[in-house]
Image (cartoon, rainbow, N blue to C red; front, top):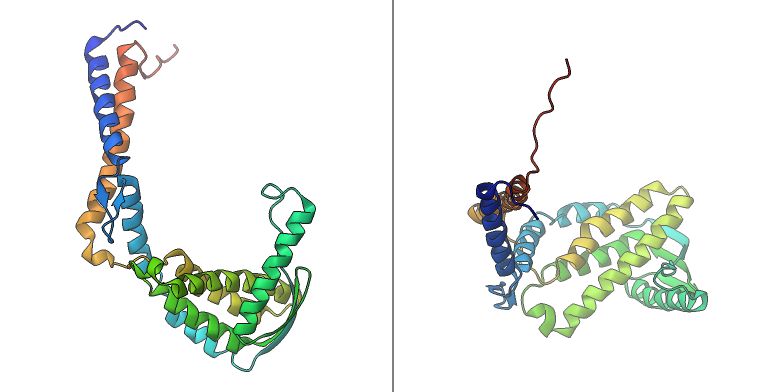
Length: 256
């Protein structure tokens, strides 16, 4: 490689070396989470933003309001539990067996929620009071959402409730599609709300404490600023090194 401009190349090389040193620190387990566990910088920042997201993802008042309107609403649907993606399970027989097992698990959860369920292969014949099953789901989601710290791993019942939320989400998703086909839009929308604003946040933010942005403004500004500076850091190192080997960005001369 022929270096034609030593000064900019040296500047770029210095920036690249320091960039890689900082990158090594970021990817090293030198930080601690809210439980005292060692984390990499990437995990630490991800954990931090998840805490802020959890605090702004509490929509349970909205879910409760939707659930209250479903009391006495009777539904009867044939819901098909999806098979695994062919990329994940190319064997048709195994994919069907997995869907059948999922259907059995989901049926038990829906029965616990108060529904009457019959199972044939991976199809559920569900009869239920929509208010009863969505209220059950809402209450479970609230309890799972509230779990933080070591309780997430130390208490098996909490882990079981989290799995229950996942099975309810799968069951409600299949039921919602069936209701949409039957043009029961209001009922389908109610299930969708419970899934997106209740069960999903509960499952995704399980174990994490929620923190308001107002109490973490300095950390938030610091991380976002570092992200911008670090991105530019890498960009300028490449820019100066390219300039050092004679490659630069200049406006082309106007043709006369």
